[in-house]
Amino acid sequence: MKRESREDSPAVLVRAWAERLDLHCLPVLLSVAAVVFVLVAFTGQWPWKGNGYNSYTLQACSWLKGRLDLGQNYEWLELAVYGGKYYVSFPPFPSYVMLPFAAVFGEHTPDHWIALAVLLLGVFYAVRLCEEVQHSRSSVAFFTLFLYLASGLLFVSINGYVWFIAQNMCFTLSVMSLYYAVKGKGGMSLTLWACAVGCRPMAAMYVLLLLYILWEKEKMPWHTYFLKKWHWAAGPVLLALSYMLLNYFRFGSIVEFGHNYLPEFTRTETGQFDLSYVKANISQLFALPQSQGEGMPLKFSTANGMAFWLVTPLFITALAAWLYCFVKKRKGEIATLVLIPVLTVFYVFILCCHRTLGGWHFGNRYLLDTLPWLFYGLMRWKPEGKWFVRWNLPLFFLGFALNLTGTAATYNYWI
Image (cartoon, rainbow, N blue to C red; front, side, top):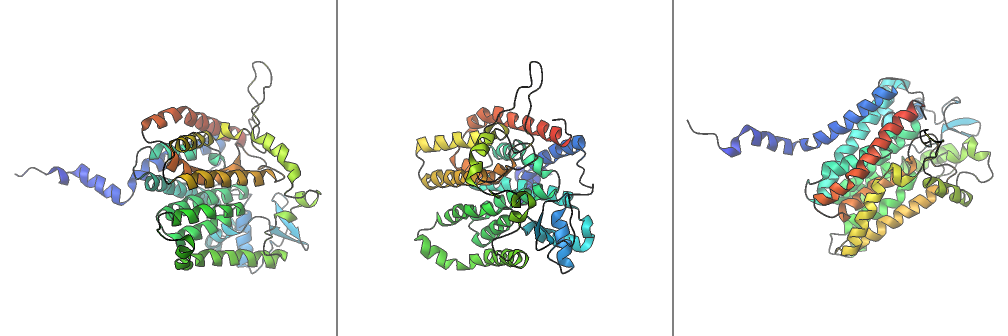
């Protein structure tokens, strides 16, 4: 009997099948799912529970009834009050996602399950983005888990609360837009970016990075290239028109999505954004846990954030990779070495002009919006070889332990 060739062995065939189905992502997905299970087990944030903070579902249900306002006040939600009516005060894209579910489930839409699905979809695309940028699978699992488990993303991803699910969606949509930009699929990339803007409007500024990624491999002037690709604008333009029309018919302005009509901002002279907030907010971004006396545990902030580099050590890793790439003067990276830091610093400055830095939460949830873009830069800048991973292991475990413990402690009101 002829001996089975090595190429036809079951192990090789299974590996080839896994390659075609992208099953190499599975260990990373299962790792994130395992951590989420531990968190919901300790916090009781089970995905089948009802959601009292379901503003996007309530809005979708109202739209299905032919009404733009909610029809009544929900005192525990952040609602814009305009013309004597109550509106959802957040950008609308998450309600677009909820529409088909609301048509079936009504106000009992499975928001928490949707949030978990969005999280895992983001993990899948983060793995693929790493592979595309690195052109290999070395260290992909480590840096993807670093992004998802060693940051405050854990806190905002385990339920469908209105404040958190929009950030979760924006994060995943940003990762997806970067992946399709790297693949050269501009229409898909820019449409997903427009979806992300409909969750978190300040993501709009990162279109500059996407356009650069799409153009950098072309051998023609940028204006000639984008004139040839004018059809890429179809998706973003349609989404932008939908946002503007909703804003106009609700608040009489194409740029007003409702936050300025929240009572907390209408009752203060300085409003939602003001330069007077900058100093205190910058100080909060560097605020360390406080001592409560000898032999007592440290006091961690659960409002408006804390030391960003401590709770999200990926910032330190990205800075180290940036310095390495800058010193090495890698050919072709000058633009990213300038563009990504400038956009990130500007993003953080605008955040610091906001009256709050995210309210009740653990970590620095507003800064999460910058991580997909910074993560892309890290993948381009970092040195090759296992030594960089080894030196970042302590930072990974610092972020992972801190966010796992802090998320459980905050949801349980232990701190």
